[in-house]
Length: 566
Image 1: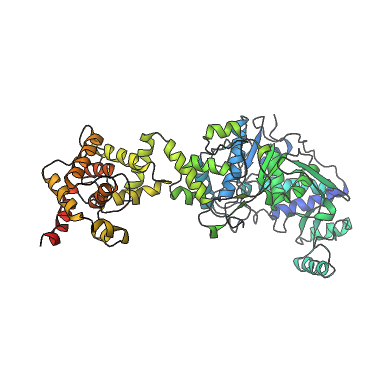
Image 2: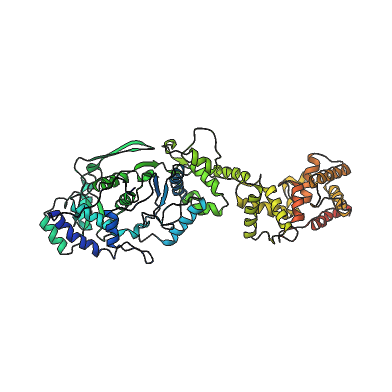
């Protein structure tokens, strides 16, 4: 099946007046090629290659073909990631093709570093492309900067068939027209000065090498409509909405809408899923597709993602790029889960989904028209649920990697190290929401700052209620070797028996036992389970500079008794 669905082959134009106008245009467009050339290191199509692709479009797999088309001018925003995700889900669900196309015609702002960053972010999310600049495919090149000759030849075709024309208006003339329209209260659209110009005058100007743009000739009285999957029927009265718009700038660089329409057609895109801000672009793109006799894809325009203040999500709302969330310790599957539910649901109250479930359940028809609000607290909650669903070995490995990278813990790969990091996972699983939460938690467990805890208002009632007596009992028990150290076969049972013995020796139980016991052994009034913390201390021996061993803690507790015995 052709990569362009419903396309017609381009026959050589007959030697008419229009082709006579187009011939100098081809030469002029060729002269613009240097200005419109791709950045160094990228391979543009030759005229012969482009002509072959235009005349006989390349073949691509049949079935659903969707695309994500980022502009490499910065980081991958979560809104863009959601668009990519929705396209990917449709492709996977329907055994279709997910295309990544890089729209890098903005040569002043587009960078290869940005492109590579975006591709890495998509890879991290698991959104692997079937076709794209990094994997190839039958409908490439997949960077617009490498497809310039295709756009120029199709612009030439449109001029030859009378659907476009050269416009020689200078920027100063156009600005004067805009100001006049504003003064009269009219829409500042192009007034068609060169739309039906004298062909002889056009030839003279082309022959003289005067700069010009190529404009699309919007048919009089034309109305264009789409049945948007999300928004229903949407239509425009074309000539009263846009006027004759530019296809090629005077530099020879094609404009965004021309590139998008051509690429969607030549890449055989069957469904365009994109943000609602592109809805108005659909009119221009649809007119171009019709003029070139290419098939019109289905469209689904997604509502915006807003911040919690209901403004468009931006950097002022905090983290907005995928890479920021990756570095903050979010899981890719949790990001997939949360982003999918921004504007979509399966009709139930279910909030936690696996990727496989989303592939099976997702549908464009269930996307809502209303904007979605990005809720950071909700994302953290979703991530926490995914952390808890991970197999313990996988969670342990993730936490291990993070703690080593942070320089908080060393890892010699020993069985004792394995036991330590497994213990961290058990201790942390119910207390963290993102991977990065584990570092302060482990630092709290390994560290010991009794004097700072004494200074807190909450410690007053504990310290003033026979705390020195409890400390003495703990120190004495430790000196006799009675305190469990973490190596016991049944540490939980041993720890329970030991705490009961301390309670019996001091006449304490319940809160009057457990709160001062926590303060004495951990140097904190709140935190993870005391027994689990003690067990982790034993396994952490020599593994962290933050570690305060139990022997040193006993020394501090022993000092607490000194004022009472003086």
